Amino acid sequence: MDETIPVQTLADRLGLSVFTLRRMIRAGEIGTAPGQPDAVRRSDLQAFLQGRELPDWPTAGSDQPDSP
Image (cartoon, rainbow, N blue to C red; front, top):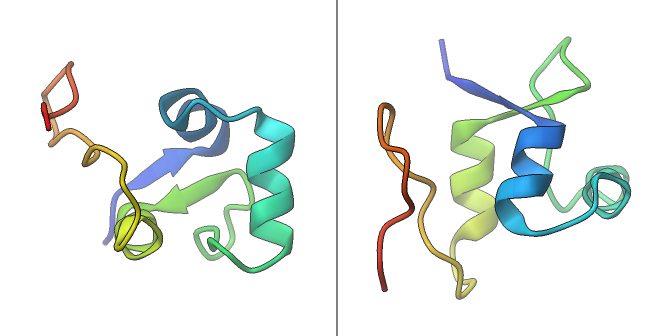
């Protein structure tokens, strides 16, 4: 099963307000995990980030984002 990330955690990590992230979810820019409206699948996040100039989400167990 794909790992999920809570919407609040993801908003904080991306430097967005939770309201902005939820607006993006409603607009279909990023999806939530099936049956979990307050979580995003890691694979959906990676697809969303492709082509954007943002640091990669850290791997499991890593506390810091990757440096550019």
